[in-house]
Length: 561
Picture 1: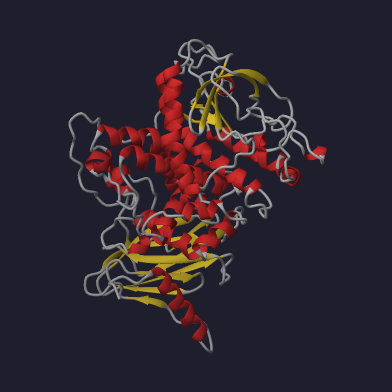
Picture 2 (picture 1 turned 90 degrees about the horizontal axis):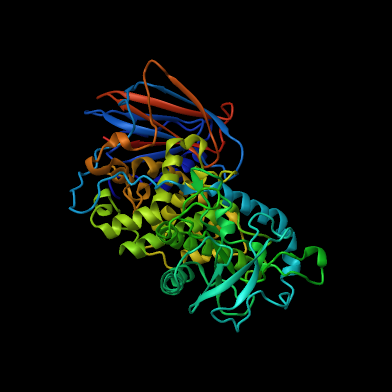
């Protein structure tokens, strides 16, 4: 047995002890914790923490293990016999990074402007509302009759494409688009109404090659192949001013591109009401066009900016295309599209996979700030591909009682938490990613049921992940409480490894305040710090849902010093 207590084992032991009590409630759990040892109990049970001969420092984490996406649980944490925890944010001083000549020193804050993920969230909502009822018609054999882009397409051909990015099946906005490059999988088109001069032919050819050799094989290997409903063997990538028009003048965020599931549906069918008349009937991406003079809404978009941002956009959007097309035409027992939080979480995993490819790194290597400033290549890959995940994860860490991987609403913190949970689950379950992502895509279940079909009982895993958000890479942290791919204490700490920069708030408990109350959303957590003096004994009790035992709340205690 390692020096720490495995959290899952600990929970089973305490549940067994409670079940064995005969005449009343089970006695207090706990005792003299060794460094790194952890204990999890349900609400309504006392936990005693013995200081021993030296005393020790501890963290207490209140976790809501409900698997719903709405609501909150109230809790009351009562404590006695402890000393005040250290003031300030929880953290530890990560190792100092060594400055590398030629590599800029920064905190890897996401570049401005950031992607407008609220637009994408609204788009996915419209897909689910308006397109799900059309599944049956779309699945009829040979529903697609005359695709927008036939297999005989050639460079120079001109086609009419619906570029409406807000209405799924009505109000089509048709623009002429010319084929400018054809790859093995990529079919690049340029909207002829775009600002001039735009990209050169060589640029379009490079986009096609990048898609064929980097993005498509990466995503297809990880998540599965998309469909080919138009039978032309390609995925259309349309650079169009219609995407630029989605960003308001001087907005702090921008829409870089999208895929729209309406294009997977037939324009007509035997059940006419279930057809989607505005569909382009094929696999399509839409990307913003270069606009260095800001002719569209005054927003300047240089060729270099569009070039550097589009690869990550395509990697992200390709996962949506794979997920939607396979739910619709391959895994035909699926009743609907994937739940939005999981769909987005998987798309953000693709951004992480792109970072590994472009940086020459791999998951499960505990990447530190030092790694990120080790070369210009790694630094640029992080800024282009991973800084978005970092920013969303920071948003989640900043307010964990109100954030969750599966919280309804799909805000930035939900996306950050969903990505982090998926990476944690894959790292914990496997020594390599293998087919873990494709199993989540090639599944007729959605949401939590999908997650459980791949990883098993989710609740204890969410609990361990919640604690890992605080204790990852802390001295003596157990494997279950570690995040193998990323050392976020180091990354947020920057060049000087400053613990104060880690964004997770932890309440320092004080003997003057014996009771702490709050609310936690399903999948959320609240964090506390306290100290037990030498020869002392602290007692903590978590009460939830008006003090009723058996709620979804659990209390986790870990000794940190």
